[in-house]
Length: 173
Image (cartoon, rainbow, N blue to C red; front, side):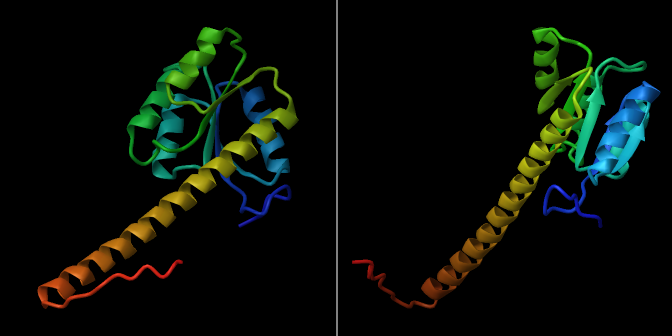
């Protein structure tokens, strides 16, 4: 796995969804140069199928597309257990506050306006990938600690059932 030269984390798999060939080409170039692995989809249904088959690390999603809007696609992604936690960044020429709010209500984590700046896209992608990595690390830590507590609780139950007495001593002073 390649490493992003701006970070110590492995290169992420990013799905770019846009019905515009120019938009796909530009975002693919920007992300590939930064060391990310990029997949593209020019139709919402193809994007949904791709994301469900191989969930990406992050999705860059255009709002205005034929078949279904980016907002609707995002809602479908958030309804599925395999894709619900994937960060979705909307990329759109829409400028109204209502459009941005609708993007967040659909489950998006960010919104980049077209025409976009390369540095802004990369900064937002990096930030949301780092947040997702931290979330996954915390989930793993909680699962490990929960397993240890469950194991300790079971051992304590067996100890009590055997009729053993124990005293907890606070030696912190």
